[in-house]
Amino acid sequence: MNERSRPEDAQATARRYGRIGGLRAHALNPPEVMLAGARRGFRERFQRLVDPEGVLAPEERERRAARAMRAHMLTLSEKSAKARRREVKAEETPPAAA
Image (tube, rainbow, N blue to C red):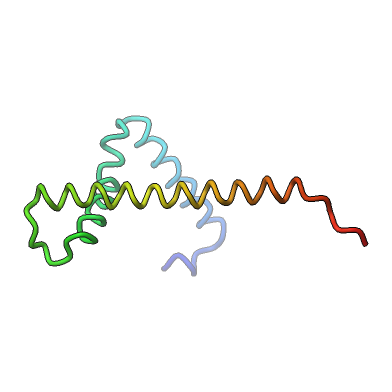
């Protein structure tokens, strides 16, 4: 029986047990253990970006990946700041008269 064919109460129960298990795992393990795979995958994404063929020396690949990650984070930061500025500007603009 797949997830779509289960009754709704069984799906809700499965979600609750999954949530309980996740919370328990995070309570019993340090963040380094719980997030190691995600961090490794995130880092490898940038390594593949800067060296898709895998021809660079590991040190050079890591150096370039670190810079690509910094550029990515700065881009996200700039987009966030721009959105906040837009939000403040919208709050300051009086509504149009009808």
